[in-house]
Image 1 (tube, rainbow, N blue to C red):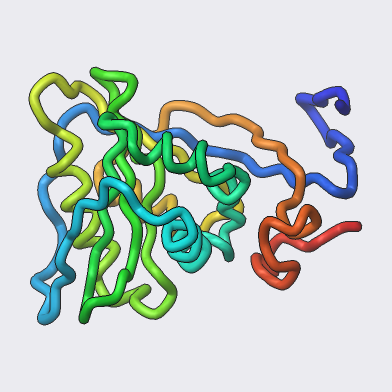
Image 2 (image 1 turned 90 degrees about the vertical axis):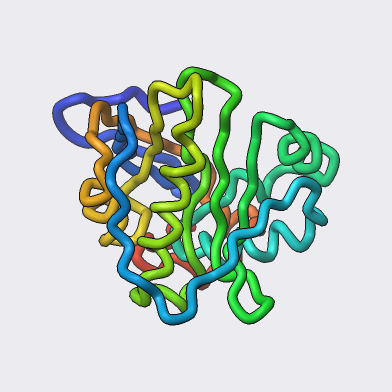
Length: 200
């Protein structure tokens, strides 16, 4: 593993990528901000998704942002994670089709993590993300919850961090994340996330 240089550059192996992650939190529920949607989605709680169906949606929402952690889990580990009663998966549906993903992790109360959040490319910019965040805040802040937190990184959509700030989250930490490039390991197609060049 390369030595981390805190004032300058740190060399990475060509088959790895690195991003700066920003951690944000909310200590009390922010007021809803979503405009009225002419065709609001229906938010469906899913307790035991088929692993392949889940992975397909996970890719649709997150491939361009290099989401890959859940794609590296085998079926048994993925089922076990999503079957945990403290992990809540919600899928916004429109016209019978999934248009996003919302996953809340209550395993570390009184903190709740917004583990995964996003919408499919086809509905970006139409208010569904804002609507889904309002639902996330409503669902997260239940009795016994004192803190709602998430992290985003420099691989994410450029509007992600401003969106979270407008939603009422406050940044509190930064970390450097390094991991094998999932496009080189075959977890994701090589052509996704063109804003992060493939080296190797």
